[in-house]
Length: 383
Ligand SMILES: NC(=O)c1ccc[n+]([C@@H]2O[C@H](COP(=O)([O-])OP(=O)(O)OC[C@H]3O[C@@H](n4cnc5c(N)ncnc54)[C@H](OP(=O)(O)O)[C@@H]3O)[C@@H](O)[C@H]2O)c1
Image (cartoon, rainbow, N blue to C red; front, side, top):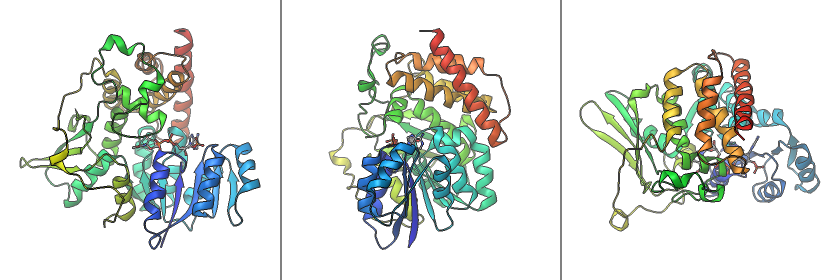
């Protein structure tokens, strides 16, 4: 029986993870759940899954939960509590599904203590890729990708990496694939969050609309699979049926297919190297629309180009890109800036933040804070 902590349990990935776990009560038990402040959602999850610990970052929300939680569930609060349930000695598996850089410290804590870390929180790798990969090697932790594209590549590489030439990440193109660029100026947060194929949290939905999500995934792939930027390509595949391609030097190309449902990748991260029922239905290609593949237009999806630039630049640039993106997406969701201002904010922040090394956690955090400060002043000065 594997004991699982789910960080970001009330979110899209967290709930899908609980759904897969519920199908296999003989294999997994929920040890701890966390969220930021959604205490009512957490209360329902506590009643259903009876974790040993429930963590809410927000102290007031934690207090509300403490008054109502079922007996046997200990309610904790604050960022240290998140680290505690990620690194607790009784935990075997950690689902890292907090959104954004807020997930980095807990992901690192899980890796440091040698857990199986099911990585949905791609921002951790973008911010602190070298630190996380080195810590994984040192502790013997398992870092299993949950992003559907990286899970696909991971699955295709089970025969080994011998002869691996390059990979191609597939991208849906998001809700604005066919929107003319002059109309993008006026799109609303609601429109940006209406993804054609996937149901996801708001931040990743906006990232998909700008294609920054794919940019972050390019950087994630660089760290996970040890590939250089020119070995990682992106192709738009609006149907989201093929989850990525792996090219070998003998001309063979492997890919993994499936319906666009995150439970497949989550289930594989849980059961690896075996497979189990995930609840996802069978793919019937005779009933699918024709599969299309289109090269991304970098002048429309400039965030993708900025991510490649940051990866090539290295050092603190990926962390700066991520921080500026989080600030800009939050401002867009709050109707403070327009959709096209997201990439402009990131571009200007990348120019303004001095180049530095991020070889310690303290330097990663320092750069993240400085980049956020500069991104906010870029937004204020353009208001
Ligand atoms: N959704 C997908 O299909 C998908 C696919 C691939 C990768 N991912 C990645 O998975 C991660 C989670 O995405 P999601 O779509 O599941 O996000 P989501 O639906 O927005 O859920 C985010 C979760 O994180 C918690 N949270 C938010 N801010 C926090 C903070 N400052 N500290 C601690 N916890 C916090 C939320 O709690 P509250 O409910 O209290 O706000 C919630 O439980 C992201 O990194 C995303 O890029 C998602």
